[in-house]
Each structure stands twice: as structure tokens, then as C-alpha cells.
Figure (cartoon, rainbow, N blue to C red):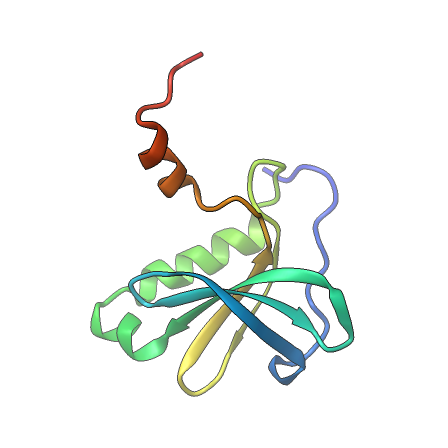
Amino acid sequence: MVEGRKPAHLDCSLADIVFGISLGEGAFGNVRVGWTKQNTKTKYAIKTMKKTEIIKSKHVDHIENEKNILEKLQHSFVLDYYGFYQDDRYIYFITELLKGGDLFTYHRSVGNFSAK
């Protein structure tokens, strides 16, 4: 399952992360561009989710599974995972920033993918 070098976990606190513009919204929160105060050149995608919404919709297991999978999986076809943070109201997944939008939106715009 592992392919090559595993990306480094961010070595900073949540207070060291700067949140930029929003890239999109989902059922539990949104995804924003972010960077650390120590390195403003490297950009990340920060998935921010409201704890209350996750609990209310009974998706805690799904979020824990997502975190566990991201921590273990490393492949050129899967975005790099850099860490997990939380505060009283939110949880945060820090991942590689991939420009160009998400696969679901792209798929809707082009229709079905061909097998070729």
C-alpha cells in the first residue's frame, strides 16, 4: 500500500497555521488554503469540520476512518496527508493542495469516464 517516501507531518501547533481563502464547502465544514507562519510559500488544503455537525449526523466513525486511512495510505494517486488538529469546535485535516478542483465536480462536468 505504501509507495515511496511518506510526507512529513507538520511540526507546528494549530496556532501556527494561517487560514486563507475558502476552496469549497461540504456537509460538515469547508476546505481552505493554508500555510504555516514559518513557511508561507508551501500551501496546504485544510479541511475544517464542525464537531457538532459530525456528532449530530452520527458520522464520527466515518471521520475516524478517514483519518486512519489518510495516516496509512501513501500513493501517487492519493493526496499527501500532513496531519490532524482539533480545537473545541472543529477538527482539521491538513493535506496536499491540489489545484484544479475535486474529482466529483470534474466528473459531473464531463459525464461518464470511458474505460480507455
